[in-house]
Length: 160
Ligand SMILES: [Zn+2]
Image 1 (tube, rainbow, N blue to C red):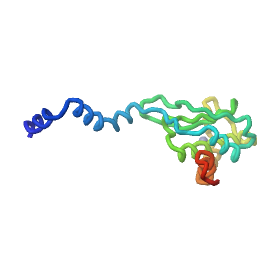
Image 2 (image 1 turned 60 degrees about the horizontal axis):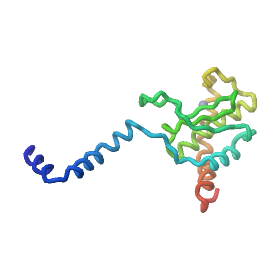
Image 3 (image 1 turned 90 degrees about the vertical axis):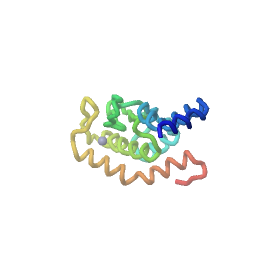
Image 4 (image 1 turned 180 degrees about the vertical axis):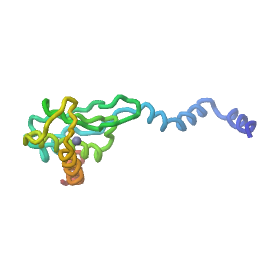
């Protein structure tokens, strides 16, 4: 068997063997050295924010890593109530569906802060459970609608 394999590889071109090897290893390399998602549309995001956020004009959206990068991704997004910034981690959030869900969750926290219903800790984490439950429910309830609104801007043929 081993001799047969050596014979087959001997017949193949070196570059082709390299290509086969690279193709076999590619998925694990991508998972190991994951690149940030860049497929989001800022204009469409601003449009969605305008639909769901209170006083959306002073709300900023940014994309950067929120996790240390050991393959453990604890948070996909966060809201900074003092600066009014929603940060989304493009290493975790990698599709329009996940983007819209994370965005809605943080928009809900922004609205809670806007209504004076939130106490913001140093790390921007919310210890009060009802606040967190509300954000999760808000995201679940509006995800499909928000995704349609998002897609209506990324795809000119789509309708909200
Ligand atoms: Zn939350």
